[in-house]
Amino acid sequence: MRVLAESHDGTVGGVSGTELLELVRKARTFLASRGLKKGDRCGLLAPNNIQWVALDLAMMAEGLIVVPLYARQAPAELVAMMKDCAPSLLCCGDAALRDGIVHAWPEAPSQVLFEEIFAGVDGVAIDQTEVRESDAVTIIYTSGTSGEAKGVVLTAANVGFMLESTSARLDQLMEGRAGQDRILHYLPLSFAASWIALLTFLKRRSLVILNMDLARLANDMRVVGPDYFLNVPQLLDRMRRAVDEQLWQTGGVAQVIYSRAKGAWARGPEKRPQAGDRVWLWLANKLVFPAIRKKMIGSNLRALICGSAPLNPETQLYFMMLGIRVLQVYGLTETTAICTMDDPHHVQPGRVGPAVPGVEMKLGENDEILVRGPNVFPGYWNRPLESANARGEGWFHTGDQGEVNAGGNWRIVGRIKNLIVLGSGHKLSPEPIEEQILRNLPGAQQVVLIGNGRGYLSTIVTGSVTREQVQTALDAVNSDLPHYKQVRAFSLRPEGFSIENGCLTANGKVKRDVIAARMNSEIEEMYQTVKTA
Image (cartoon, rainbow, N blue to C red; front, side, top):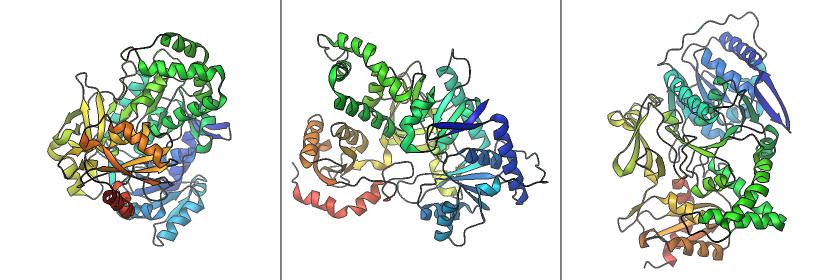
């Protein structure tokens, strides 16, 4: 029975559990031959593939500390991380990745390519290494929206607790289903949530199919026909827009039914439904929505699982309209990727579910989310002061602003450090306003609010939009906001913010300080041309 596979141009080939263990054995013989000691750090630099998984498992089995590195990240940033944790060995997926590191860091530690590792070493005995619960198993570097990234140390106890929690939630999702779960996985394994998901899937003996080309992800969804898979909000938003655009271009009866049904769904029973709404929804559920679901992601899907950033509630409701559950999770690398998970039977759009059993959460100053439990990391690598500050009075300070309802279901409002304090003293989280503007501006890629110490808010908008479109969107959003939250000026930037131009972190979060510094002249111009009200 296969447990791990790769999708190449629509062809899926993989390995059984026995074959995966043989790859792990070969990797362990190589690592053992290098004289590495328990607790030594080893860098792992490669895109997702079966060998990455085998090597990760081999390193942990040898008692080594895995330092997963994002293959798309700039070599200079990767070098900074490695200088921080001083790995004894760097394992690279190919020569190009290795050469990029060596060029940026001629004194880099010993490097080896996957092809050499998986050739194995004959005659090398593999010892049974004891890994205690308190032992560190990985150092995962945080994205670092401002300043340098920090190495988050996770222990065997952290990981073991989380795997039990995530597996239990998937048991709920898949109850009544016999056989092997089928999962498509595309998020980089160097990210904490993606890694925890992978280990959970392997623990459950699921079939995990790795997407090897993001350009073919849509095709892989249809070919694989997954039961569920992990997503980021950006992909779900893109899927939603793609359906709208395709049906608009196709036209005909299907487009009419779809548009009318969308309007009926948006109104809902609490927003004065119009005559005929039930008919349009019935027609769409019979004739249009099933075809969309099948073409988009096959016919086996139980749920889409979404994390890494708050999901637009309208996007979650959109998929619910199509008959697709979207389950949200919330957490940070420091909390072993997860603090909350949606209950598959009690999903509330716009919220990220209750705290994982065994994890405590509460609100602190400025409604900051504080977390305590066996999922919380012991500290940052070689940063005792920052570790102590992050875990003040026994609680981990997430830096996220949130709220919780009477049922214990959490909602994420924004980042505390992103709070904008206007010259008037008003404080506000930029994320909700940015999301509202984006919902009213389909052609925009990003919206970044500016306003610290200023008399009013302004925004930078990226993407293919006109000044007239932006102004129309701002007028619509401003009409429902108090005066201090209204956006009164904007600057257009055709090029989007990206990892490559240094304005996004490795997992796609906006580096606000970098953007403010790079676009200082444009920002100053916005505040010179608009008068405060």
